[in-house]
Image (cartoon, rainbow, N blue to C red):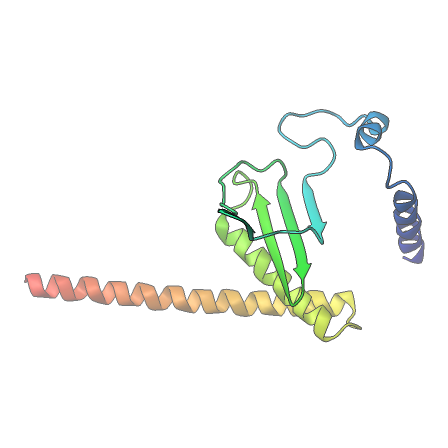
Length: 166
């Protein structure tokens, strides 16, 4: 296993050493197989420490972000920005691959992972994964209970309406 992590580190260091290489040169060298249904190099992109301004003000002019419903160029794009004292995460995803519930679940688990890592920085990856599995199981149990409660309430409402019609 140590060879794998050493190989990863040397690959990462090599990539950092060539980070100024123009993107079109990388594509030219890699010659990825083209498919109009996918981005040629990556399907999932995680961008960290970008600046996301929520509102810009100028004399006699005020601008703000407007959420747009545009198709995603990636299967999943996660934008993470940190500006004291807050951090924000935004995501864009392919509606053909993910539904809202799946993205919400992924965001929930991501938040739990970040909370665990920041609270206990020396946690092992296996402990974080175990913690995420437990959190996911608790969340699903809560959602299941809520679904059952709502279903029971609706059933009782239907029974009451039926009883008043008789």
